[in-house]
Image (cartoon, rainbow, N blue to C red):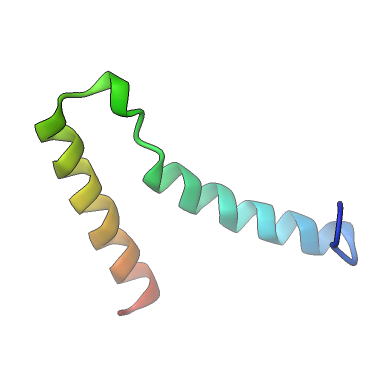
Length: 53
């Protein structure tokens, strides 16, 4: 809980962080370069839609 004022605040941050981390953590060693680029493009498109850029 370092630098968080409450357990609730830490849980909110970690919940949001986990969702973003899972979106961009693709396991590069498990897929081909072409598929990896495709997955990254989809991840960034999802991120842009989520933050309404």
